[in-house]
Image (tube, one colour):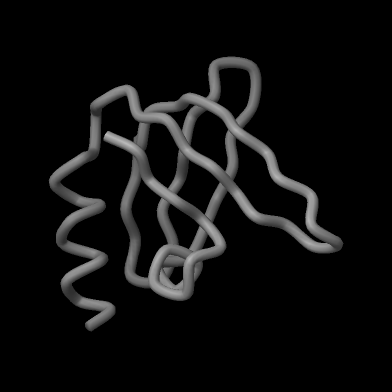
Length: 68
């Protein structure tokens, strides 16, 4: 299952995408960024002024929503 998520993220690399992150204590953060690098367990999102990294498991369990 995580392989499918990883392959989907790799296909989206280089495109500007909207994300919604469900953090701790019901904090929700929405941002746009470009997936720049994909590694074995994590991927990097470039936000312009900063970068964020997330694991493929974050997408799988629903903490990070990817809106194409």
